[in-house]
Length: 438
Image 1: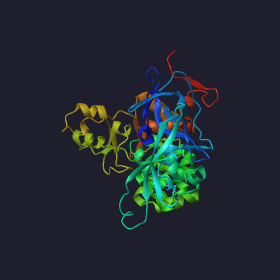
Image 2: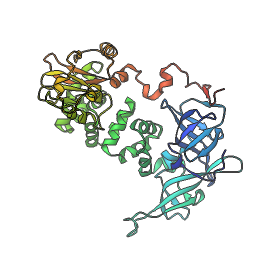
Image 3: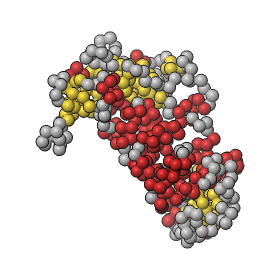
Image 4: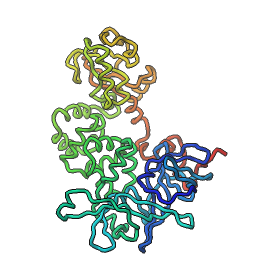
């Protein structure tokens, strides 16, 4: 391994991992340390690496040959592809030590762990030798401003045993800083690897918009767990912040009493589209659609249409098409005229009216269309998004290809990863992958 004297966990999180021939393996998401009964620094057992398929696997430190500021390289050999599962004597450095409350060895000074550094030993092991900490105090003045950062040996800090970490309340500030650079789907995968207590603490610290995005990427059981944990008022706020179709899917898994209670706590203008979606079966166009596509009136210009599509909050699939309707433009709209494809908009003068370039030949889906019909529709017309129109020619919403795929894949696809979907057997103990091209 390249000569490195000290590496902080926050620097490692997110670094790309490569094989000996430069092939991409994945990204570092955490460090796994083995806690000891004495006060000696814990040994770093390995890395939690997230593969391109979102699966998280354990890579022993002995497989790491170099740690650079911008990448980690593994030695030639095989890596066990079983999903990482934390053992009773192990601690996740990023997931569990960051923001942990502890005391200095004097037994009086209260501190918060901000970061942790690993250092190599003569035996090629790595140990969690240093902790970056801030003092917590209620003394006048110190509680109102941030205390200075200190880096201390592990032996000078007490209260970081497994029982301590599982029993005490813990903040989430440092973890949220790392999450700021991650996509919602990656944050969701990280949450799933955390103990329940820690997962709930992170949810408490997240703002509603971010938590809504993350919940949309969680498996169904984890979604229900987090929603049940949150106070009902906040749960309703989270549902309001979610995409209406995702909120409807989640509410559909709850009891009728819970549905009614949460819908009643939501703002009427937010709950109404969700109620409409709940009226349809989840495997029909009405149940799959989002009621918030890009809707334009015939007298809108190409420039106005492009401005709407450029909205960074708009999912890519929804941005592939705008729908032209008579007023009102809120779903259910006035009479549906047709659609305008994004690529067509790019080829037209900005002042051109969308009415002159509208596609009136593309058939629309009916809200009762079932999944097989919807799949054939998307395949036949090579679409990323399609209109859902009722018999009275009102646009009700739009189905996107990602929602179709979500229902075509197995129910547990978020948990198993793409390798499992393709028929691999990587949950078997002997399953490995070679980290070379030999």
